[in-house]
Amino acid sequence: MPLANVEELVKGILTGDRRMIARAISVAENNPLEAQRLIAAVYPRTGRAHVVGLTGAGGVGKSTLAEKIIHEYRRRDKTVGVVAVDPTSPFTGGAFLGDRIRMQELTGDEGVFIRSMATRNYVGGIAKATRNAVRILDAAGKDVVLVEAVGAGQSEVEIVKVAHTVVVMHAPGLGNEIQAIKAGIMEIADIFVVNKADRENAAKTATDIQGILQLGGKEGGWKVPVLKTIALTGEGVAELVDKIGEHRQFLQSGGGTEREAMRIETELVEAVKDKVAEAVFFGLRKREKFQELLKKIIDREIDPASAADELLRKMGID
Ligand SMILES: Nc1nc2c(ncn2[C@@H]2O[C@H](COP(=O)(O)OP(=O)(O)OP(=O)(O)O)[C@@H](O)[C@H]2O)c(=O)[nH]1
Ligand SMILES: [Mg+2]
Image 1 (tube, rainbow, N blue to C red):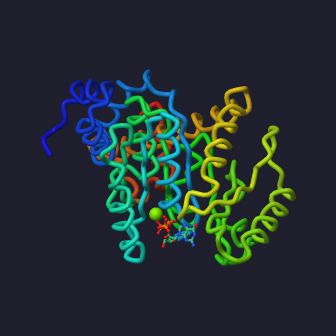
Image 2 (tube, rainbow, N blue to C red):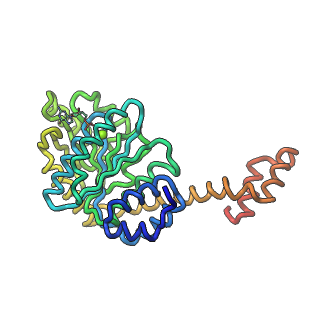
Image 3 (cartoon, protein in one colour):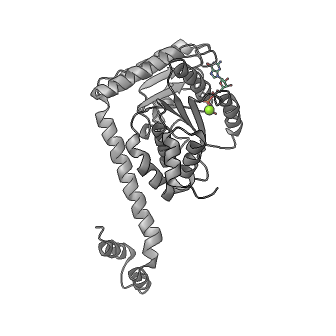
């Protein structure tokens, strides 16, 4: 791919040019330096989209439900961007292909933009690339950006870092509900969905989850609802989309301020860490002082940790 012209990409994003949006997301995936310039340029135009995370174990029905959610938003005249984070493990390779084919039906619609991101072979980390892809779609004017990712423990993406509203999916027969809490997936839920409600035991699964949720209790006045869906037929999807909207209203009326501040703080800290790491890996080696200290360590004149302190002091970071 030829080196992207950032100005051209920014113009394309802001006018909703699909080819440019696609290229911009590729830049976000593969080229951290260009990505930073790009995001810096579009950042003032972001913050409008409602970012909805959809997560749950493999095979729970995320992609099937995502497709129905998109259709529901389109019926409500909302434009939708989708970032499907795929772990591309040999085990889910087939599902990934299936996703693409199913999702393809929607790509003829100008109001929908779908992008799959592979978690493998990544420059700069998947969470960062996902966040930037979300920002690009936000700046491109999408009303809703849906992020689909396999649940905690199986993916590096912590969906809570990017999403305003997190929908956690479960299905009857997937196993012990307590196990789900252990995996850390339940406390991130703003909305809980029991999918495959056509199956036996769906009602019991929902009641069990309700019970577990009541034990935890989410602070801040939002009561996590447990909804039932049949993604295959679309049953329960309109109610889910309503709830997602209610959660947004809750956030906008002040319920999300703290979480937003935390999200931004986390990102800022990560950005600082990245920059420091960059400085260490690329800048440090060139320094005379570095070579000098290296020799001193070898000669047992100084220990590595003290040498690191000395280097950081020299760089003005201490
Ligand atoms: N019976 C039933 N099957 C469903 C329902 N929703 C999805 N499925 C089926 O469950 C299987 C997995 O669905 P996907 O949408 O691919 O699940 P996923 O969570 O995206 O899976 P991964 O991307 O591999 O993590 C497919 O065969 C679907 O047809 C449902 O409501 N009822
Ligand atoms: Mg899927």
